[in-house]
Image 1 (spheres, rainbow, N blue to C red):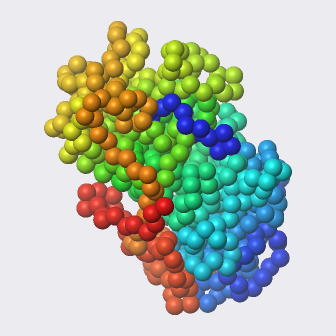
Image 2: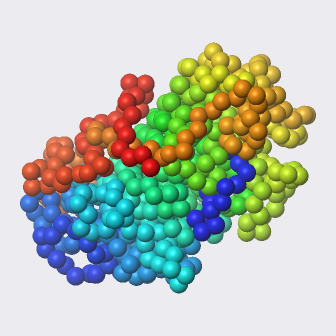
Image 3: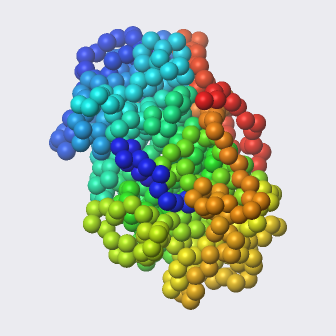
Length: 589
C-alpha cells in the first residue's frame, strides 16, 4: 500500500565522475547523475567494467561513473565489492526531486542500459557509510540518512533509481540499507516513471537475481520501506529470482500503472515484511507465479486507493477486451502456483497503511476488482488464508480524482469505499489456516460493504476450515452478476477491524501483537546467476562474447568478499512446500 514518505500517516484501511581508475574495488564516493535519456546518442553495445573480477581490473571505480558515460545498448558489469554509491550527495536533490524519488546512490537515466553484477551475493550496493566494518553493517553509527533539506531534516536515500529510462535491466546483486527520510526514500531499487504523477513515464524493465534487505531498524520514520519497486512504469516488465526482507511497507511493489502494468513476477521470495507483495492501482496484465510469501504480517496485498499512486482503481481486467492466456477469462491480474504460508508475524517493521494488513492473513484483496487467485497453496495463516475486503480511504482525493468517478462510494465515517468486485478464487488448497480460532477465522472470507456491483466467485477450493460467511462457494459460484445487497460477513467485519486495530475487539478475540521489531538475516543459499556472461558482448571478463562455456563459480579466491549480516550464497531456491525454512533472527529492536 502506498503513502508519500513526507506525509506518511496511518490511514483507515484493512488492509548509482567519469574519471577512469584502474584496479580498485569501489568503497566510497559516487559521481554526478547521467544525462537525461532524452539526449540523442547512437545505439551502442559497449561493455563497461566496474571493479575487479577474477584478478582482472575494470576501468571504473564506481557504478555511477560507468553509468555516466554509458550509451543506450551498453552493458555495465560489476565485480565483487561493497559499493557505497553516493550520487545523491555528489548532486544533491532539490526538495521537488526528493519528493519525486529523483535521487539515489545510483541514478540511471539512459535507456536500454544493462547493469549486471558478477555474483549476486558479493556485488553489494550498500547504503551505509564508507568505512563500515562489514557490508550492510547494522550499527547505527554507520547508517547514512541522506542529504539534509533546508529545515535540517534528512531526505532519506534510495539505492538504484531508474528514472524515466525505458528498457533498463538490473541483475545479480544485493542492495541494502537505503533508509527513509522526508523524501520519497527508503527504496532499494526503483524503476521510477515519475512518482505520484498519475502518468506512465517508463516503459519496459527487467530485474533478476536481486536481493534487497535492511539490517538496521531505528524506528519507522527511517526504516527501509520497499525492496524491489516499480511505479508509473508500463511493461513489458519481468522480475525473476527476487528476495526481500525487513521492509516496513512491502518486499516488492508494483503500482500506479493503471491497466498497462504488463509485468510477470516469478520465483520471488518475500519474508519478514509488513506486506510481502503490495500493489496499489496496478492492473491489466500482472502475473505473479511460482513464488513464496512467508512470515510477513500479511503475505500479499493488492488494493485500490484514491490518495497514493494514482489513478485509481486497481483493475485486473484485460485491456481492450482481451482474454488472459493464463486465466482464460477477461481477468489478466493472476496470482497462480504460489506458496503462501505462516504469515502471522506482528514483529515486522510496519508503517503507514501497510501497518493495517491483518496479521495472520496469507493474502488480502483490498478493493481490487477483476483479479484471479488460482491454483495456490495457503498454509498456516492463523487468521485467514485470503480475504476479499473493502479499502476505505478517508484521505483527500489526489490529482482531480473523485470517489464516484473511480468506482468508489462515499460512506459517512469511512470516506471513499472501494469494494472487491468481480474477483475469482479458484482451485486453491488451504491447509491449517484460520487456526487462531476466533469467530470467522477461516480459509477465506469476503466483506462487501455496498450493493449493485459485480459479484466475486469462489470455485473448487480445498478449504477444510470453510469460509466467512459460510458457504461462499455455494452462494457465489459465478463471477459477474450484479449484487443486490451488501454482505459484511456477519462477525467477519468486527474481527477484521479488531485484527487491524481499527475497531473494538469482540469479547474473547485474540490476535498476535508485538511491541518490538525483529529483523531476519538473508538466507545463505539464494541462487546467483548461473552464467553472468550470458548475452554480454565479448569483453575482458567475458571473452567468449556471451557465454563462459560453463556456469561460473560463485566467487574465486581473488573475488572473495566477506559479508556481514547480509551473507548470501549460490545455491538455488525453489518455491514450494519443500522450501519451508526455520526462522533466522539477528536483531530485536
